[in-house]
Length: 101
Image (cartoon, rainbow, N blue to C red):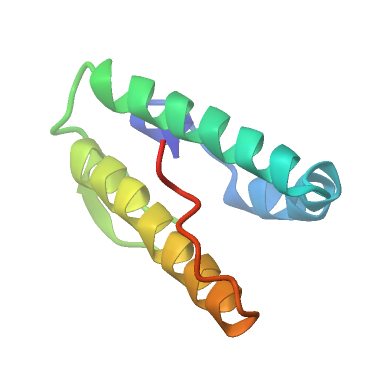
């Protein structure tokens, strides 16, 4: 997403094909946390440095929108997955908040 916001062409088929490799790299909670933090930093920098926030990009699901809106959707989507993780941890009996800095 950050590459797309920066105006680069993105081959989504190649990106999705790399998911199993990424999964192997995040075999511990610490590795997963580091990967998410690094990804979020890259996304934040891309949004901050976006030269043309109004440039129209095509999301992986085919919808066209301004680059800055796509960046907002991607950032917001991280919270969606955070909610999934929170739900799973509470089902398993863990009621602690782990996302506070």
